[in-house]
Image 1 (spheres, rainbow, N blue to C red):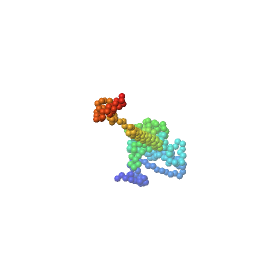
Image 2 (cartoon, one colour; image 1 turned 60 degrees about the horizontal axis):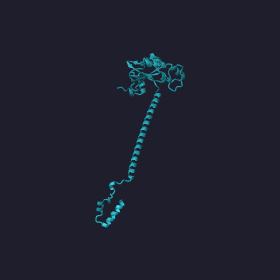
Image 3 (cartoon, helix red, strand yellow; image 1 turned 45 degrees about the vertical axis):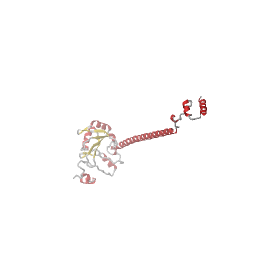
Image 4 (spheres, helix red, strand yellow; image 1 turned 90 degrees about the vertical axis):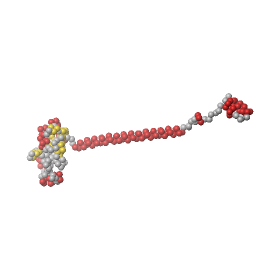
Length: 255
């Protein structure tokens, strides 16, 4: 049974069991004098056995490199590093180095692998000695083992993080503006509804306060006393003397 992922790093070193796909290992050497560190840096990118080795100082080291000397923490130079995508999952650093070597002096090759299985993730980085070599590699190193590589200038992870943070901040700002605009629209709609309701209430109250007009049918009809028949009908049974006097008064009043 494969228990490669369950072994500790110390156990793997003692048993020399680095995994079926793991053919390299990192190590650290502590020198007594700084001069020895400077000499050791000269071994960077030289071959040890059938592999090229990378010799660096730890970040924060006070050792000064000689002019033009390779190695050291300054190799984190993304200006001369090519990002390589669409690599085969099973491939070695030496194979990638051999493919890119014709475009210039290679300072380092790094492939991204799974921490437990050591299978490649299809991406890597190739660092050249100059930006001219980087541009030549991007233009010419497109094909590899029948695959079309994705090549572009590598970017500093810190810069990528800052860019991602700026993008997220801008996105959040747009979201906040949309939320504020929606809130304002809802408040405006509420204000309009309130004003409309107040207008309706005011209209209803004014209608109630208006005096009601009397219908013409409710006004009692005044009889026409100038009409002889009407007059006689109304004065039937009344004393004739009084009748003649009343008729005379009505005639005078209507004339």
